[in-house]
Length: 429
Image (cartoon, rainbow, N blue to C red; front, side, top):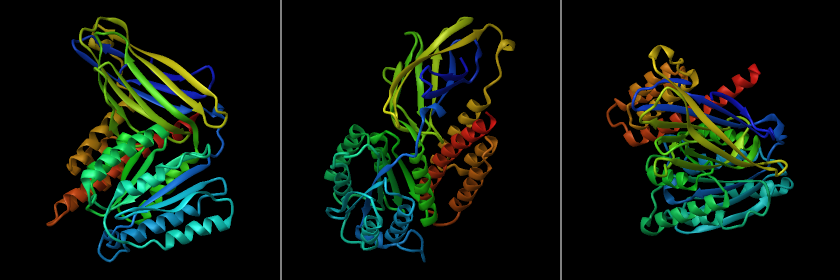
């Protein structure tokens, strides 16, 4: 199979692409499988209302700026929140909590029923001032503790620039809160500002929370505003929620050797005994869907058709509440001669290049990342990587800060790729 699958209820459209549909039967052989899932037009999506819970670091270090001569990190965050408020309407809900040494709930979960409600939140954001130390979990807990009182899409948006002041208690508590977020189906959008925050801790928190959670590095107020407005647009386009994908090898002599989720943040999924994986993606929007690159190994292939994987998709129509569960099977054809092999699927090739480029970017090898992005047709990200390479050669360059920026651009390249692919396919249909 390599093509589009539209299931009987017409809610979910799945494209399954093999690296090659006909593969030389050499021992052992690996096969790449790209799974792209999107809501179909028949899902009757209407603009989704949101429940946005802002969690803001107001520790003393937020008084500093990311770069000399620029506004303080707290001012950057405040401007971005105020800009996002302008895009919200009377169907949306907002919560605002802050943290320094302790957490404080500034505005409980409030529906923006009129201008007065929006002004209350606007004024509360304007009044935020930096103070004392950093206790991230204290602010996050306040945003997760209220039960979701409505059926609108929840998302916690966390801003921080620091290291935990008491990691012995704060770090384990963040693990617990990430588990709570995953259980309550409340994804986390984490924005790290400055150059001194704990990237690995926050990345681990986002990965553990799952459901479409992510971490991004904030370079300036325009970049932050752009990220947040884009994510709001994706939330507005949500047509399926509670989405989950499971994969299992078709037989005991086939091994699952890789499963990578590509949206909204590139991450490797845990493999269960090299034979299965599961991922709760959460909300799936019409713009970018959910994509996975899978790799299986067949130790002793023989010519003919071989079933590789069984896939199961579960979810709910956001508008009607209708639930669905579908299965798909992924076969490949092994051939005895190299001349019988089919060409490499172009989109799978581009995704493999994109992932290779992202690995180079994360490793700080920006010149190689740039070359790979150009090979994959992404000139814009290639130019960014060339700029980062030049910056990394200057005396006193902050390798950690450059690495965070590079990783954020690498994740953004994946988002842009699948969003543009969708626009192209939609325009051509």
